[in-house]
Length: 240
Length: 253
Image (cartoon, rainbow over all chains, first blue to last red; front, side, top):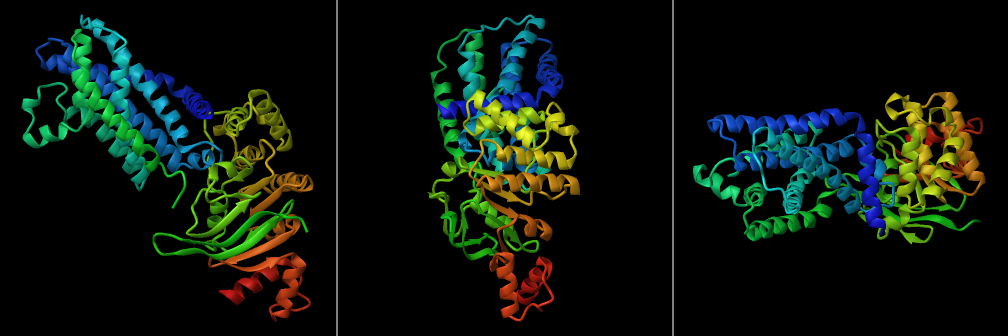
């Protein structure tokens, strides 16, 4: 009970702190993934597709969960806010879950806005509740990347560069907007251990009204479990 | 003599780089006592404080706060201590009041109790006029006062203050001294690190001097004077803490 209360407190703390930036957030939540959807539609001879929509949604999830979570963790660590929070009797995992919830909400809002944006391109995805677990199981493994950066980076600049690069790049090197066969062999093997590969597949199937996302969900759930096991190890709640 | 609220036994901290920041420190802080820790930069004051507040794990030794093992049960210790960290920052877009309310809730208080604690802390630190201001618009001195107010929430029996008056103007510093004296009168146990010798002289019951990670002197001001005289470090005419401090530091360095 205390854990959940602390998670929600951390979440609301960051919601309050970021209220002044809400306009910028909404702009970036639509502009970047929406722009990517338009761009990829353009290079596909103007034919929008659910695959490109799934890719843009994944881009939104990846960008905002890695960059959003990462920037919060980095600011807390390097600007001294973490020191203040650590004086309180809350568990490291509650803090992390609260920050993750905050970042995830941003990425989910952005992905949802892409579903609305798709209507402007006359795309009619099949929208069901199954999109939600797919989105959550996509953001959880990506959170580990932010944490690794926040834990080991020597400076806020270095970690921000890595977060920006990975947050946007990870979707590009996975077979999200294109078929896996196009990728060179090393990247194809690499993409097999990256969450966007399975998330794209699952999102596409759900939005097409197809069945058979069990394998993709199982892989994402496994990756999420690994990420959750890494969480307490990666957060320096007590210096050694 | 009052029982010890904080017991430190054989405490050492060696960083991965090999630097020994604290070496075999042993001391007690008695209930209701204010212990001031002095020492030059890099003497190990903050390292000691970070270990006591459970922010850092000791390499060796034991710390007990109000009977709780601080090395093993960090979370339980955090429930009974208030901490002003040296380099902590606040959330720029939250107001003073929001800060205090959230951190009171973090300390496990219910909403009505949290509101009451917030009012008390605002009164005690004289933050009433600035309660609705966002942190971004406060001076560094006022931010420091908010940090102290956060540490005082829920009226903890033990306070750990790492250079709480650094950056404060003389008026604000004196106001904070009054707050600490009032807390002392109410029986709060405190460890205070500072570079202001007059602050230690005014507030502390006992003074510890750290140098190169070692506790080179510990006692009341008159005890330290006595030790300095016996050791031939001080003339009869030299009375102030400043003379005592420099004699110890210069002798041991």
